[in-house]
Length: 205
Image 1 (cartoon, rainbow, N blue to C red):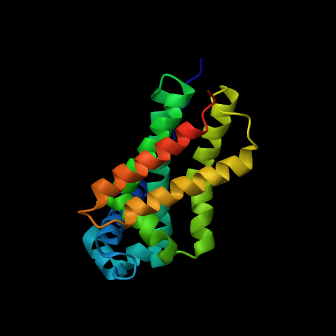
Image 2: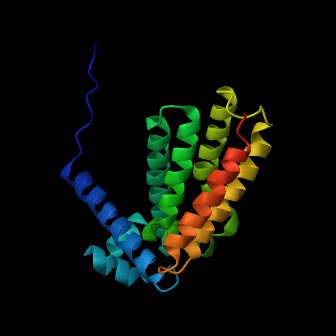
Image 3: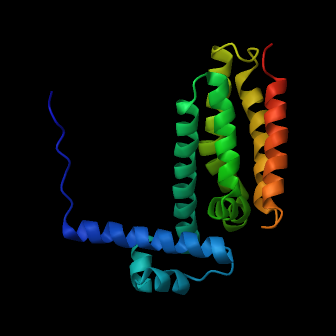
C-alpha cells in the first residue's frame, strides 16, 4: 500500500496559518462577548496580537471575518452532531442523540450567540439562511432519510419533511440562544422536551 506524502509547509505558510487562526479565535471570543456591531477590527487585531494590516492580509473586512468565524463554528458543530449520531446503537437513538447534541450546542454561549443571535444581524439574512442550509438542514435531511430507510418513520416526502422538522428544531434553537443566561437552563430543558416529544410523534409504532 502506497503512503501519501503530505506537503511540508514552509515557515511562512505556518506563520500565516497561525496568524489566521489567532484572528479567528480573537474574533470568535469578541463576537460572543460583545456582539458583532460593538466589536471593532482594532480590538480583534489587538487581542490576536497582530497588526491591522496583517488582519487585512487575511480578511477583507469585519463581515468577511465574521463569515469565516461562522463557518468554523458551524463546521465544528456539524461534526459534533454527526459523531453523536454515528455513536448511537440504532438509527432512532442516533437521531435523538443528534437533536440533543445540536440543542446543547445552541446552549453554548459562543455558538448560540455568534451563529444563532448575531448571524442574522451580521450577514444578509439570505446568506445566513444559506449557511444554515449547508449545515443544520443537511443534517436534518440526512436524519430523516436514515429514519425512513430504517423503517423508524413512515416514508414521508423527504424535502418537505426535512424542511418542516428543520424549522421546528431551528425555532427551538433560537428559543435557547435568545434566553437570558439565568433562564437558559430552563429554556433548554423546555425546548428539548418539546422537540423530543414531537419526534416521538412521528415514529412508526
